[in-house]
Length: 422
Image 1 (cartoon, rainbow, N blue to C red):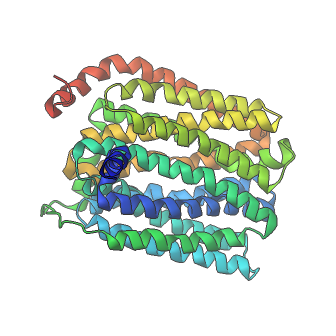
Image 2: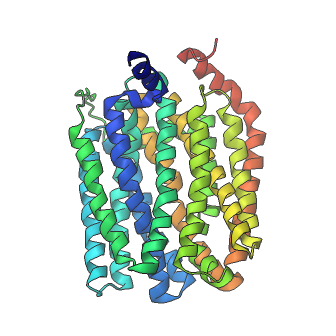
C-alpha cells in the first residue's frame, strides 16, 4: 500500500504538489470551460442576429479594446496590489457579467447593443484579470524550478477547456439555445472563486515606492522593449495576434457558408483548434528545461501560418479540422513558450508590468486584427482574409529566426546568472 501511494505521488506533476496551485488549477479548469462556451455562443448569436461579417469584427474589437487601453496601467497597479484579492474581485465581476448575459438571452430581449456593452465590460475586467493571474502563478508554486511546468499546465488547462467548451456549446446551441451557455458560464465561476478563497497565501511584502504611476509605467516599457529578447518575443506575439488570431471571428462564416454546416460545425472547428493547442501544451509541460525554447518559439508561427492557409483553402470539413489542429499547436507553442521564457527571466518587481505588456501584445492587438478582418471579409471574402493572415504569420517566423543568433548571447548571460547553464 505504501509503495502504491509513493508511486501515485511520483506520478503527480511537480507543479501540482503545491496545494495553492492545485486549487487554482482545479477551479480555473471548470471556469474556463464555461468561458469558452460563452465565446462560441456569443459569436454565433451575433452572426444569427446580424448576418454580418463586419459586425463579428466589431464585437471582437469592442470586447478587447478596453484591454489595450487599460492593460499598461493595470500592470502598474498589479505590481503594487495584492494579486490574490485582485483575482477574486475580477472573477466575481466576470460572473456577474455572464449571468447578466444569460438573463437577457433567457428572457428573449437580448439585442446586439446589449452584447456590445457587456463585451466591453468583460474586456475591462480582463485587463486586470489576465496579467494578475499570470503574475500570481509564481506566488503559488512553491519551488522556482516547477514554474515552467506550472505555466505549461496553465496552457494545457486553458486549451483543454478550449477543446471541451466549444464542443459543448455547439451541442447546446443546436438543442436548447445559446442562452444556456451563458448561464453555465456564470455558474462555473463559483468553482474558481471557491478555490481562491480556500488558498492559504503567505503575506507578500510589497515594496513601498513614491514613484508616480506614469513613471512606473514608463519604467516597465523601457525594461521590456529595451532588452532585445523580450522585445522580439512581444513583437512576434503582436504580429501573430493581429494577423493570425482574427480567424476566430470569421469561423461562423466558414462553418455555415463554406462548409455548409451549423452550430455543431462551429463547435467542432473550434474544438479541433483546442485539441491542437492542448497537445502543444502537454508537450511543453514535459520539457525539463527552458533551454531551447527560442527555436520552438521561432518555428511555431510558421506552423500556425501553414494551418491557416490550409484552412482557408479547404472546402471539406475533415481537412478543415486537421488544419485547425495545426493552428492550435502553432499558437500555443508560441504563446505559452513566450510566457515561460518571460516568467523565467523577468525581475520580480517588474513582473506585473511586463506580463501586462505581454498580455497587451495578445489581447490588445487582436481587436484591431478582428476589425480589419471583418472589413476585409466583406470585400475579398473570409477565405482570402484568413489566407493573408497565414502568410503574415510565416513571414513573422522567418524574421524572428534571423534574429536568433544575435539574441542568444544576451539570453545565455541571464541563464548563467540563474545557474541554468555553466
